[in-house]
Image (cartoon, rainbow, N blue to C red; front, side, top):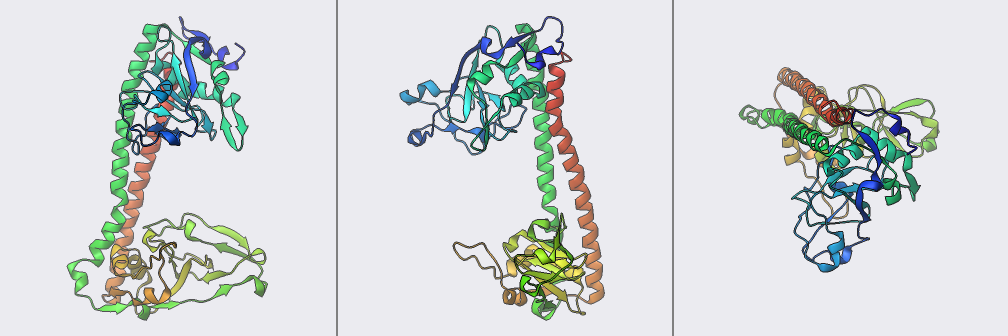
Length: 408
């Protein structure tokens, strides 16, 4: 074997083998198996192979036992390895071992079924190596680009080098990995649940304010009486020049209104009109308004034609109005147009018609300050959970690295 991977020294008693020398079968799946749908079976696809820890993503798949004789050659059985062979560079080579959940399914042509010789190789061991950094580097070196997709075939797999300890050692390490990966999966699930719960906090903060019994006692005002629609537009036909900062819908985080990006533009190169905003204005995404992309401008700039720009009149606090326009209460009161064939949107006159319960100006400012504090606490919590989740996501690669260094 001439693969540079095999120059790495292995633990005592281990050896390098070609994967093709320990395979019983490596077969592509059915090609475009539409004719098999509705016959009581489902077809596993690329996205059904989860992460590089060898897990399955079966949320949208109803798996049942295969009974159709003409699909028998493509049936997955316990211990089979299903591997992605076509798609992006990141997905090719990702694999998982067939278990009781996936047994009996068939697989599409973008996968390869790999069956190892059980007398020499534990399937979980081979799958773990293919998912590891070492295995993926080998696969990566063999990728071919076909019609914009990376692909690997059976002969490529056969030529891969596999580190092979004695069978008993494979079983022991595979068992340890199974326990460790299970712990990682549980930690991931717990953090994902905490993160999902945290994501609901901004809306809860806003509902607590704008739907509270106290809010019901405040006088109602139309937003049209509090907002002034800005109609300043930069148009290419006016031959503008100079640098400008563009903030579009894609640059505003949903629900929080936090700016997550911007784009530097040269106005002389504009190809379409762009509304202008000034520092302190409300920049409101009226396309799919349920995304709550409402931003208080931090500087002067340009936005997209899918956004309205408002200045707030002196008898209202901008931060209070911004918070209201992000709230579930605003969305419940807003007459959002959901015309078939078009994305939901809201017109300027409909924004103006929405009513807001408005306390005194000092109380508006106090409430807005409290909401800003709550939102900052949410941002810190989400960052902490996101960092923890990222650390958990790095664990499978580290565990596999230790396993194939003979350190577990």
